[in-house]
Length: 91
Image (cartoon, rainbow, N blue to C red; front, side, top):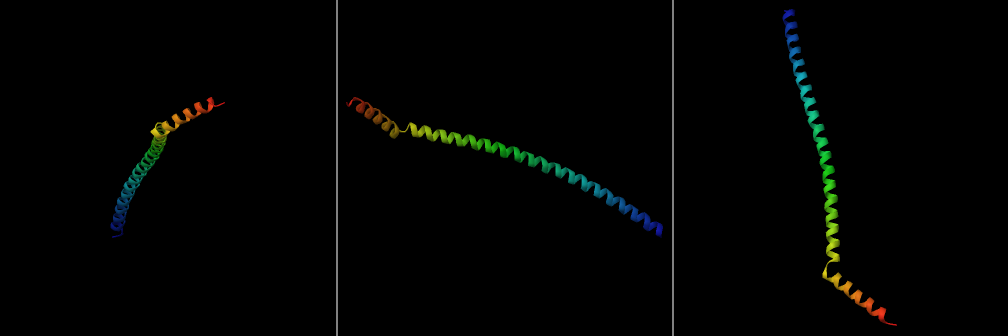
């Protein structure tokens, strides 16, 4: 009787060891996937920051371009040139 119990316990221990090994392997695999995802997220965040900087520069440059080439500014620049020329002729 004791021998049968010992064999049965030994078999259960083998099954549990096998399950533990599978769980550890799955855990390693999931850890690797998580690390890969973290690295990818980090690279994507850097890329988003670069793109955000580029878009910010484009918006800034576009707003400057629109400001300097808007009709209002052109008129003011023209009036400024005229007034400078007028005041230079006054003795």
